[in-house]
Structure formats: C-alpha cells, structure tokens
Image (cartoon, rainbow, N blue to C red; front, top):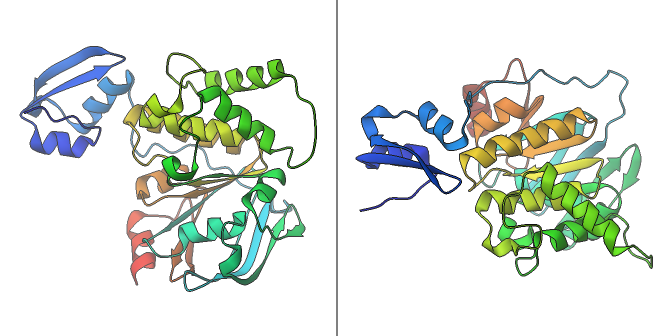
Length: 306
C-alpha cells in the first residue's frame, strides 16, 4: 500500500518505509526507523527548519496609536463583549478552542456578519468605523485571509494573475477608473515572484496548484491591496511543511514592514513562534493575554479551557 501525506506524524506512525519527493525528484528513501520529524522536514524543504525558533520580539512604542481597536464587540452568542487592540509592526495572536469566537470576531471586523452584529465599536487608525460589507473594509486598508481558502479565498476558475489583479484592484473600492493592463500584469507577476508561487506561470489556473501554492495566491491577493492590517485565520492549515515555513516568513516580513497583523490559529506552536502578544478567546470574549516572553502552551490551554 502507498500512503501519501504531508502529516509527518502519520507517516512516522503508519509507514514501514518512507520516501521524500521534492520538486518531482526522489530525495531520500529508507526504513521509517531512520527518520524523525526534523530529518523529514530538512529533506522536504532542502534546508534545516528549527521548530520553535523565535524571531526577535517586535514591540510597539508606548505612544503608538493602535492600527485597530475593538471595544465590546458582540455577535449573537459567538462574540460577547470582546475588546482588544493591534499595534503597527506587531503580530497579535488569537488562540482558543473551536467556538470560542476567535474566527467570528474577524468576520465581525470585516463586515461579514452585518445581520447578526450585536453592537460594539471599532477604530481603524484612530477613526471609528463600522463595515457592512467586506469590500468596504478592504477599501479602507484591511485584508482578510480566510480559514477556508476554497470557499472564499480565491476564484478557482481564474488564473494566478487574475486573482492577484482582483486583489490589487479591490483596494481602490467602488468607482470608475482606468488602469493599464500592463500595470496590472506587472503587479501580479511581482507578487507571484515575491511569494514564490510555483506552477507553470502566473497564467495557470489556481485550481491546479498545490494547497500551499493556493494559499500563497490567497495571501498575494490580500497583500497586493497594500493593507494597514491583515487578519490571517489558520494561514497554514492544509499546506505542506515547506510552504508553512514560507508563509510564516511572509507574516514576519509584513509585520516588520510596520503593518498590523492578527494571527488566528489553533496550532499553538505557530502562535508561540509568531505572535508578539497572545490573546486567548473563550466564550466569545478575551479570557487572558500573554506577552511573548511569558506565554507557554500549557498556560494558553489552561486559559482556553478553565
């Protein structure tokens, strides 16, 4: 039987022999006992990847104006008086169990749930806002990388180039304007190159890309908007380990450039690796907050459960 997977623990548990393919070539093969997670990762991406290696903490100046501030946001039974701030150059992680409100608050901010909006206030760069459509949030400088890329992350019948072009055009909002096709093509190619989207070219249909490359298209589509704030919801779910490393670096680079980042993830090592501050959602509100230095997986889980 042949078992194909990028879930490393499954391969190490169930396989008798393991072969690693990269870029269409057989890199290594051998009995499972000769492999561990670190060696598999190294062979899969062609370089050493150190789990848990943390980048230097980015600290917002004490006088920095928050990019985003939400106060007492409510939505049905899922979000209950949730309040927090996000600062420029900072990755704010939101952890929590399924149903804790961690993903739902992102949809409230973006205007996805106007019918169920129960109240609260939102400020973007010190200006109070409330969006009734996601397009309005995008035009205002907020990008959203959905947890379900196939449902609302990209247009699968369109090419890589067309998806990125649509993302870039979205920042201009509604209205009539002229844009040279050559300019749009240049923008799309630039982002495809920056994010190392691998395929036969930017004219390839997104439908036939790997999960990791599809996710990079979603991210390119969002970052092409040149947003002030990006909300990443489960950005590495269902992608291969090499793409995970690249996507995490994209998130770091974006924060280093001075933008605000919200990282929503159910994978605690990812939160601990990337976030400068970690908020724990529970019962639709923020139950705890940790600095990068004091955060531990046990502490986060304890706050999420108890």
